[in-house]
Image (cartoon, rainbow, N blue to C red):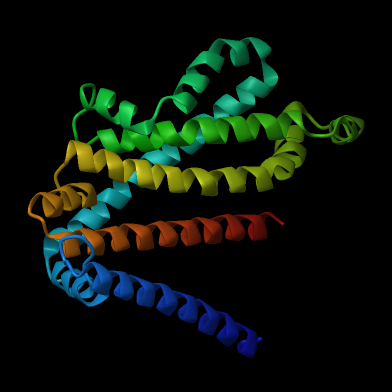
Length: 251
């Protein structure tokens, strides 16, 4: 088991080093720090950022905003998915709104919402908006796809509708829900940061990115982009751990 883990770590490290080498080669070919800064200059920029309070405050606040938007989107999307599966009228009534959210580019929503919300709340709203249709569609599809024999079995054992939902339906749709939540988390994070870049709220990674771009600190832009990517991976791993723990406790 230890050798297998060591092999995986070695493989991932080798892949990472390969792409860093590709980055370095491209930087040497372009030979212009304003276009592609080297990995070393990007690392130096990251170290400089890590020595400031503004950096940690921005990371914390950006995470908080987007996690709030994600959580709200999961709850509302899940509830709407349940209602859509139970009521064809609700499904038909809300279908145009869902299709509109899916069809309109996120940049358009960011620009429109910029006039509706304060810059502080805009990333929360955009993250929420990106999550809702994914969770909604996944929940509805999973519920409608449940084999009726499971419901009939619950009825044979004289379970109430509430008991059937929590003891039969919920466990059956849980894998689909996890997949949708992980997918929507990535969309929420990327769109939330994009909203911060446009709205430039105080204490945010997006506003730091925009400021670095304005000052032509391209190595800083690369460093902040790397931070955004790393935080996205951390959030995904944390969510997987959370769902894994819930499933373990449930079983």
